[in-house]
Image 1 (cartoon, helix red, strand yellow):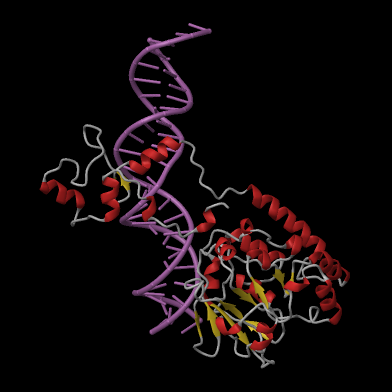
Image 2: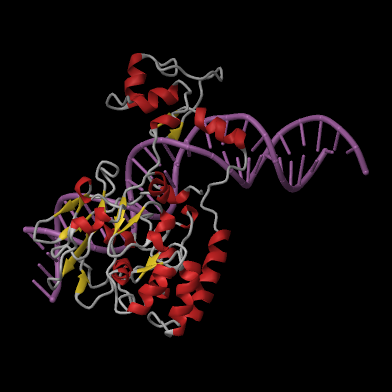
Length: 329
DNA sequence: CAAGGAGTAACTACCACAGATCATA
DNA sequence: CATATGATCTGTGGTAGTTACTCCT
């Protein structure tokens, strides 16, 4: 997985693109720390839309527990479905354009039934990141497994409208928020998120001004799930410190061996012998006659990759990694 | 509800061989 | 002790096969 979940806050929050949620471990951490009793990563998202009237439903299997080594729990995220159980007032599109942040008319903004809560995106920017359907009156977002937060960084156009929970809707809270240094970025029901750094939200809290907000939250004895704010901070600190020590990069100990491996001829992915003279074999094979070659290649097994490898060409460009979580930032 | 097939993703073995490492003379 | 030689081990990447799991019928 590396569908980034950046729904934490301030010191809790994933601030940079290097803080992407990139593993099952991350998800477990998130679920345990922020959404205790979560049955699936879906619940994590639900916390963002924390509202008794709002439900995020997926098709969670009864056994939606995701041990670290199991199949990717993010699979559950591939079938996100937001649903509004009650009809609340719709957000007037004009309100968004009026604040200068969002011109709804140019956005593919998908309402979730009541349009009270929706996640929008510029589909021209994200042709494959999300896809949606409205089959049964619910919007379903398909989140590409390996969409890196870097992509979000580089492309603006991610809309995120959280539900406000009761605390956020508190006049006192809104006052504090609007008085904060980054209040201009928090402009009411619609907030444009242009980077992962902007996606600092939990339970609808904008995170950027958390210096003020967190104290407020603490004063309000804000507690999510089983952990107090302090406990969460400690857990997050431990998590992040351990996380920094993780090494997602495959370190090449011997560059020369990599070079050799890249240039080494392969047969169905396996290293093949060089010819007897130690020369890099040509496309035509290993000086084999036609009969041997047919046998060697099986049923005419020829493809571009192998032709390249047989020529000793590294075909780096022919392979586009799809799992960004293994690449450090 | 249980069983079985389809679909999907993660994981792993396999291969050749240059270079590193170790043991011995 | 220093050097030479041979044997053994290590590491490198793409693919196919296996495993585990979910979803659907």
